[in-house]
Image (cartoon, rainbow, N blue to C red):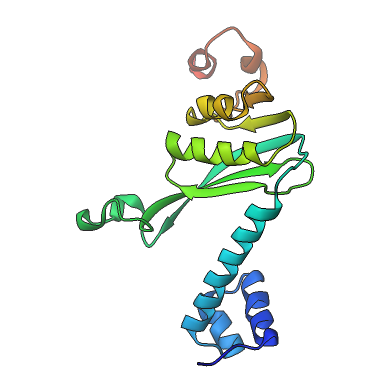
Amino acid sequence: MNKLTTEKRAQIVAALVEGNSIRATCRMTGAAKGTVLKLLRDLGCACAEYQDRTLRGLRCRRLQCDELWGFVGMKAVNVPVERKGEWGVGDVWTWVGIDADTKLVPSWLIGPRDSGTAYTFIEDLASRLTHRVQVTTDGHKAYLDAVYDAFGGEVDYSMLVKLYGSEQAGEARYSLRSASDAVRPR
């Protein structure tokens, strides 16, 4: 069994951190695809274990929580019937809590966008903090109960809901007339 030298591991990790694809990293470093994938998996496990062990007793003041959508292999609408519900195929959500001041990520979780995952994520986040904190989330309703159950009364919680749409120009913007009245030709 071949073992990678520390220098070769550093070269592979540096290429990946710079945003190179797995295949490009293989070409650049001369490592096999399986070797790069195994190193990446092992490194991810080591980082997750380190973060879980050391990011405790934090004194964060302002946290922002959100979920990021992505997909593995294919979007959920394209998953064949026989693979529906299979872990690691289709839509995936990364739940993340970020300290607004330091940009530290005390907690993250990968799972579906449901209330069960919200509870698990927020409980983990709360377990890492030492004092009252301000938490801001988007308008996802799963956060409501999760935040209050995990933090109890020791949280200042707000939802930031963004409304998207076209902005009215000129007088119509401040008028008591409806938007349809403001743009209707006369």
